Image (tube, rainbow, N blue to C red):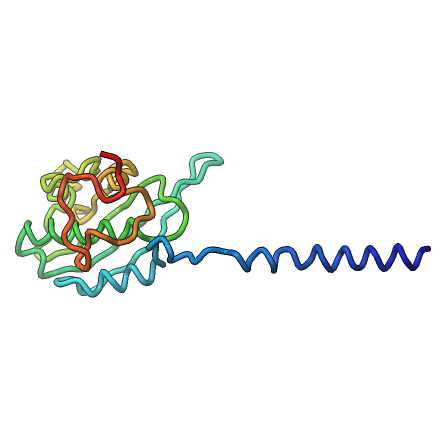
Length: 188
């Protein structure tokens, strides 16, 4: 009787240990929805005209016990500094790519850092190009120090590009994004 109980417990333990392995068999492809790794998104950004370097990271901030995440994009595009229109076009291409990045849900949106020569005011250019919910410095001293940076709240990319994570449509491979217009998959 005791041998039978031991055999049943061992069998139950073996079956229970197989559950995690078997449940992984039906895991959906993470790229099936068009979302991509940070490395893949950065590589696509580096392939854009006028971009010499690009990195995509996830930044985490905490407020008490709550964690918030945002997608952080750093780009060096020295030649784009010759024209505000070039920078506006670059923002239109980069934001949908950033919004297609897998990871923690970016409830704090996106921070975009584009370094140009000469340095142009990225936030003002984005706002003037039709992007909403853009945070950027207005103080001249801050503009001089961090004029290369703009923050986009969660609502703006969701409304203008589509709910996160989007497939990277509206980029250089899918045609330019219409500034100030809701993105694909967004209710009209």
